[in-house]
Image (cartoon, rainbow, N blue to C red; front, side):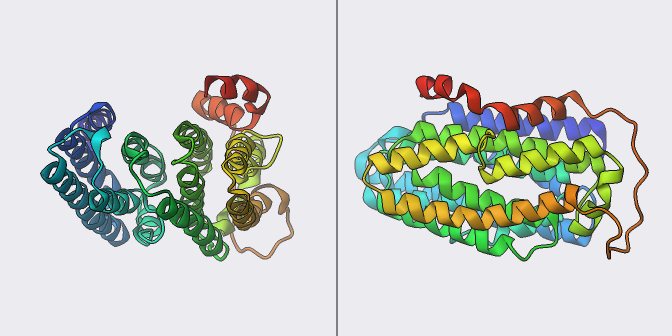
Length: 346
């Protein structure tokens, strides 16, 4: 792709995201979402592979439907209350439609079917954008309307997302699909706490973004798309493979790594809200995710030859890893000691 064109699309992506997260009016928020969708489409389909074109088509159809539902819910609310302000979403039917629309935008259960397919058809760098920055505007809209949304519906969708994200990731051999189901599972954790402490939703999203950034950049550096290639990647960059192991365990939420912090705070908050059974259920479902993270970590670092894969061993790379990978990997694994400071900010 032409570098100038790529720059225009990335600038449009930032413009769309900024427009949505800073707007108070529904029409502005909708326009930002549309700019976002249109600017990511060329980045998904830039390889011109049939799977990439299919991914771009699926993404466009899903996001267009979700945007139409956002517009419809805001118009219905304006019709009944005379308010176009995002925080004044009070009509019950509008809130229900909005919840469905944003779930579709994010790829939450039961609107999750498009997300693994789109991520599988995209390059790793575009997959990173889809998993992180493209989820920021819908999560911001959820944050701004959380007081109006139905807590029971959000809790049910969260439990289903955590369950399906765990179950469906177990049998995957493609790394991008595993990360897609991991994203769906994390969305469950973000949504379950939204009605009680929305700042925790944002904290979970920021830390998830940090860990996902580290994993995608590492995979892009060592050029891994499948588990069978991941088995031989340790010869190419042993230090990166070791950091990948720690970051995956952090994403699974194991102490004493960064990923344990949001899960710990969310379980604590749910228990305070007399929702200990829900906290137990979602914690048990996160064990399914732990299994496939351990599987990835095992393939990345613990599987040494002789093994049954027919892939060639890769040459050791002496090229230094980028500074961004170093910073994100350290932050993805070592932020737990400053959790009192983070709790004080919240």
